[in-house]
Image (cartoon, protein in one colour):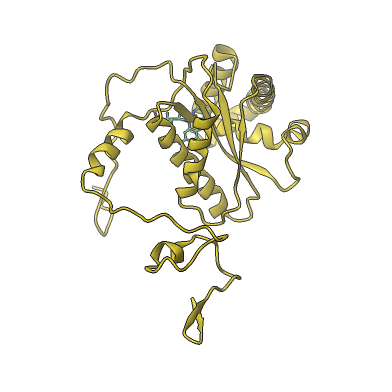
Length: 256
Ligand SMILES: Cc1cc2nc3c(=O)[nH]c(=O)nc-3n(C[C@H](O)[C@H](O)[C@H](O)COP(=O)(O)O)c2cc1C
């Protein structure tokens, strides 16, 4: 921060409105839009246990119940995204709860994925060529077949709300910020008894569909940067598998 006559001056060219200055101001002299900040409580040692429990019991929900989430709860989930790391503060959240609109989005996504499938996998020589360069194409192909043939749906059944993080992806940090916001919302949802799952498979089909973009009120620069599906979970988490230990090293990765 620069200073004039001993008083700090905010450089608006580089300020990303992170509000750290407000967070650190001992005299509560700084405000944003005139709103006096709440006093922060100290981080307690015993938060860790509850927080870890929250993390350990969250799973992506693939089956939802039919019940509607009250709007107040949707607001709480969305508002919690304000506390996620966010570099640009230029992300808008669009909550879609209209069942017809969700059905419409699903149909567009199905058509889009079918089109990709036909393009890459129905022309034998092309799919053989792709297969030579990438093993993961087989996995992608199988996942597409699962959604197109077995599930016949991209959106999970009974999804109650789709949260779209929308913005202009001028920089990679905007996309990353959108994902941090959505993952924070996913944890908040879990703390409120609401199931969720990230749905990146919907991004491209919505971004590329003009009619749908217009229906959703998008500007031409708007892109869906991430999607979180919400609903009351129909799944009961009984166990916490210990499957994946994150490879962890100090100072240097050793690959024996
Ligand atoms: C970036 C990202 C995108 C995802 N997109 C989808 C998706 O499009 N469809 C879906 O069913 N699950 C999606 N998932 C959820 C994953 O399937 C799920 O997170 C993964 O299987 C791990 O399960 P867990 O979240 O219960 O630990 C996505 C997850 C991540 C991290």
